[in-house]
Figure 1 (tube, rainbow, N blue to C red):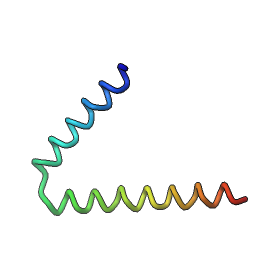
Figure 2: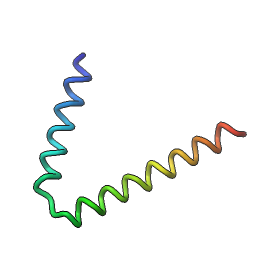
Figure 3: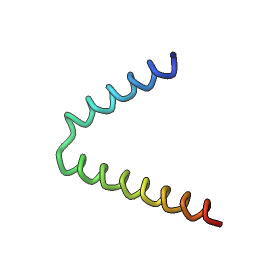
Length: 50
Protein backbone atom coordinates (compact mmCIF):
# COMPACT_ATOMS: atom_id res chain seq x y z
CA UNK A 1 0.00 0.00 0.00
CA UNK A 2 2.85 2.34 0.81
CA UNK A 3 4.34 1.64 -2.62
CA UNK A 4 1.06 2.67 -4.27
CA UNK A 5 0.95 5.92 -2.30
CA UNK A 6 4.55 6.70 -3.22
CA UNK A 7 3.89 5.92 -6.90
CA UNK A 8 0.84 8.18 -6.99
CA UNK A 9 2.75 10.96 -5.26
CA UNK A 10 5.59 10.68 -7.77
CA UNK A 11 3.11 10.64 -10.66
CA UNK A 12 1.49 13.80 -9.34
CA UNK A 13 4.83 15.57 -9.04
CA UNK A 14 5.87 14.55 -12.55
CA UNK A 15 2.55 15.54 -14.12
CA UNK A 16 2.70 18.84 -12.30
CA UNK A 17 6.18 19.45 -13.69
CA UNK A 18 5.09 18.53 -17.22
CA UNK A 19 2.19 20.95 -17.02
CA UNK A 20 4.65 23.81 -16.52
CA UNK A 21 7.27 22.63 -19.02
CA UNK A 22 7.38 23.96 -22.58
CA UNK A 23 5.52 21.85 -25.13
CA UNK A 24 8.67 21.14 -27.17
CA UNK A 25 10.47 19.79 -24.11
CA UNK A 26 7.49 17.59 -23.22
CA UNK A 27 7.27 16.16 -26.74
CA UNK A 28 11.01 15.44 -26.95
CA UNK A 29 11.02 13.81 -23.52
CA UNK A 30 7.98 11.69 -24.41
CA UNK A 31 9.67 10.60 -27.65
CA UNK A 32 12.86 9.60 -25.81
CA UNK A 33 10.86 7.55 -23.31
CA UNK A 34 8.87 5.89 -26.12
CA UNK A 35 12.05 4.90 -27.96
CA UNK A 36 13.56 3.59 -24.74
CA UNK A 37 10.48 1.44 -24.09
CA UNK A 38 10.41 0.18 -27.69
CA UNK A 39 14.08 -0.87 -27.52
CA UNK A 40 13.45 -2.59 -24.19
CA UNK A 41 10.43 -4.46 -25.60
CA UNK A 42 12.37 -5.55 -28.68
CA UNK A 43 15.26 -6.82 -26.56
CA UNK A 44 12.90 -8.72 -24.27
CA UNK A 45 11.06 -10.28 -27.21
CA UNK A 46 14.37 -11.28 -28.81
CA UNK A 47 15.64 -12.76 -25.54
CA UNK A 48 12.52 -14.91 -25.09
CA UNK A 49 12.80 -16.37 -28.59
CA UNK A 50 16.33 -17.68 -28.01
